[in-house]
Image: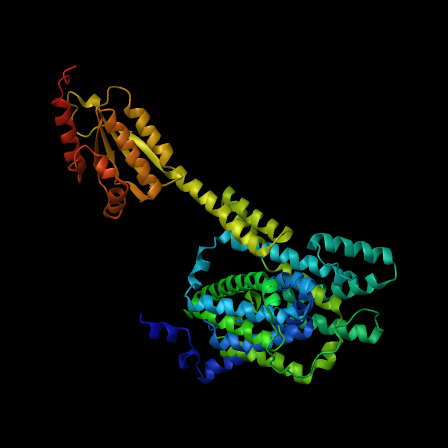
Length: 557
């Protein structure tokens, strides 16, 4: 593919849309449905991140439209998410709300560059148990972050979410001013409404109904609980965030973490959406590099309008697909629905109790990873279960990005251990009728992978068995090796050198064409007594070995 073609693949095209009445109607209905579902989540994630409900709305609108137009998935819905709120909360606590706009722009630039450099496929290297452990950890963190709001306490800053949640409960109980009863009642009522409606009427936007009901009751009873507060009745004008050398230095680490999370979560969500549409028979695909470009532009635009970094939202994307979305017009419509709320209904929205939003997120977290998925991961294998658990614990206890990195390392360890265990060496009987001198010939078949995790064990066994029983010829069958790395090839060269140095002739049979260059480079072939000691068939190798043994002076003995 030429450079110009690669560039065109990253840009919007007319084929992104289908304006036939049937498709257009399905997209508009799906967009309206997702917009209703996304409204309380946008408010809640904005509050949870510490940036504010207004920033959540702005992000849902601006980033939602930009990502839909420029992204690589036709059904992906983007906006503020729980994972991003988890990452942003400590940034806001350390550097203030004003830092978020700059972090958004910087992170957007990094994600955009990753897409332009065609790094989108890297997400496929993240193992399944790491993804699920990360999701479970995020769900736990979001739930814990809502505890202060649910009990009507001020959330402590700079503490682990579990510790902060416990301290908030203690503070609310010891205050004994009745606030905890009101806030727990609001959060609990929203949770009950969402759970009941989800089972009784799945098509109804349960979170919106729950929040509306609690808001009406709170107003009617004049409940003494905190509300969202004043919201802008229009989109702010775009402003380039101020940045000096000191600010860039202080926020660069946070921007890189945000960028990594935005890329990972968006690509995972797009991959899930592609799977869902394929299962539905639509056969939709996503373009990971273009998705990164779209998400990068979305975060940059959101930062300019005073919003927060955006990512693809798995839950909203799933609702979009299930509602019949066919093109990216559905995601654009979802953003326009929220935009209409900003211009027409910020008064009622400003009266929503914060505890109601906490209830929404608490229920949402319980649906982020189904119990069936957890059981599948745990039962798959011990290594899979450990990888899943380690990733989840580190996500909750330490850091999201570190959790993914360590989870990948743990998964790699168990994978290498499994591959090394599958590698083996077997001493085989010589083919054909037994002949005099066969006891001096050792035939070894090497299977699996000859790599750094298994080479020493395999070749030590060959060396040990070859240096006894009067063996004078060793035949190595390499056709069963699926993979050879540099370490394995170098170890094989050292084995051949050792055996030849002790007077044992080594014959090699069945070197695969893909392995030949590496074996020649590290010197395996140079260590052989004769360059003709590489054979294509086992029969010729054994015939040569028997001829060599028969020609030895003490062959008769």
